[in-house]
Structures are given as structure tokens and as C-alpha cells.
Length: 312
Image 1 (tube, rainbow, N blue to C red):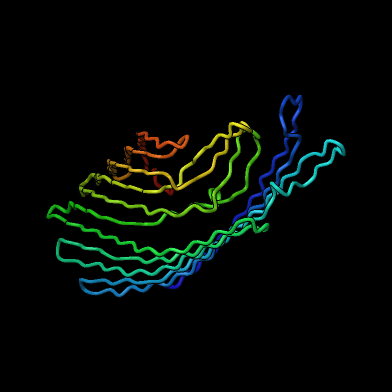
Image 2: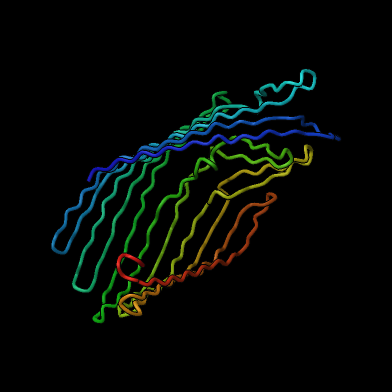
């Protein structure tokens, strides 16, 4: 198979701030404009060779992303009353990312056993620069990602599966864009173009009961190191808090899930699924390592009835 995908997006956030009744405050009226553009081209070729017991897969993939941001800051001249461009707070940012990958995978069936295994190689090339040439970012790194899964089917058609996989999570442009949002002059928000992607490690196990009620349950354990998390710093002289992102986080998550599908009658069907996830989080706050824990849960229930004649 040969595939190609193109995606694009744009955003033009802006804010106009009027400051009145100023007391010991160094900021006058100001406007901000941020012209953002993103595009992505993906090329992929996959080959599958099916055999009696062994299926072999392989492929190559290329992702080419471009993100641009042209941001400007205008402040009112107290003498003329006109807004003037402030070069110190204005710049243009161009971010190019190329991800080149190749993978090889094998799927082997042996009576009641099924084995899947493979490896993926990725080369990432990042170039980011500013129109003012005040700073350039260049990153080059390679990664190998293994994955393996084992499935066992029992005589009653119930099945057990376990697996391990790795994948890469790359920060989005909203976290990379160095545009400083000064909507609130006391609390500034900005991205960090030097953020690095992180590796997501996942281990899973599940059990399926295939009877009148199709029931599946299992758990996942996922851990990430050097995660890009929000980091805030306070400038005691200017009395301004700046929030950005940095690769300082550590996340562990243990989840349990359940899914059940019950065809009560020929026309009535009940489906439910839910999960519980417990997180261990670690990050930096006030230049100190801080730890916390978080419990999340979700439950969904749906009922459908087929009235016939095309209505459900």
C-alpha cells in the first residue's frame, strides 16, 4: 500500500489591552498579534507478506512538519497616542521537523497461540530559527522502539493477551511556540522551542470472555521520563510570573479497564465500558522537586434498541 496525507491549520489570536488608573505600573495600552500556520505532509509505504502460519510486515514512513509564528507587540506612545511596534517583544519563528521511520514486524500463529513482535526505527531532524537570529535550535536523534504481544486462546474461546510497546510523544506547536502571551501583564505564558520528545513505555494484559455477554478486562502500566510539563517562575523584582514548559516531569500511570456487550434480545443491546487510572506525578515547582498523586475514573453506559424499518 502507498499512502499520502496532508494536513494544515491556522490561527490568528489577538488581544487589545487598555490600562486605566495606573498606579506604579510600567505598562501602557498595548496590542498583540500572532499569525500561526502549520502544515504536515506524510508519505508511507507498507508491504505485507501473508504465509500459512507466519505473516511478515515492513514499511517506511516520512513525516514533514512545518510550523510558523509571526508575533508582534504594539504599545501606545503616550505623547502621540499612536501604537508603535516594539521589536523587543516581536519576532518570527519557523519550526521544521522531519521524522523518518522504518519498521519490520512478524505475526506467528501456532494452534492456540499467537505471537507478534517487531521493531521500529525513527530518525528525527529538528531545525528552528527566529527572524531576528537571536537563537537557533537544532536537534538530531535516533530511536529504536520494540513491541511484542502474546495471545492465548482457550477451548471455551476465552483468550488472554499480554504485551509491551514503546512509542514517541512529540510536543505540539502550542508548547513549542516562543510567542509570549501578555494578555495579563502579571502572568505571562510562553512555549519552549527546545523541548524534546519523550518515550512512552506501556505494558498491558487483558482477558476476554466470549459468551452471550462479551466481556473484556485488563490493566495497563505506562511510564514516561523527562515529560514536558508546565513550569512557572516568579520574578520578585518585576513581580511577574512566567509560565512555560520544560522536560522536568516524571509520570507513572496504572490503569484498569472493563468492557461488556450484552445483547439482551434480538433488538435490545446494552454496552458498558469504564476505566480507573492512578497517576504518580513528579515535577519542578519553585525550583524544587514536587510529587503528587491523582486518581481518575470514567464509566460509560449505552443502550440501543432496533425499532426496525431503519430506525434505532
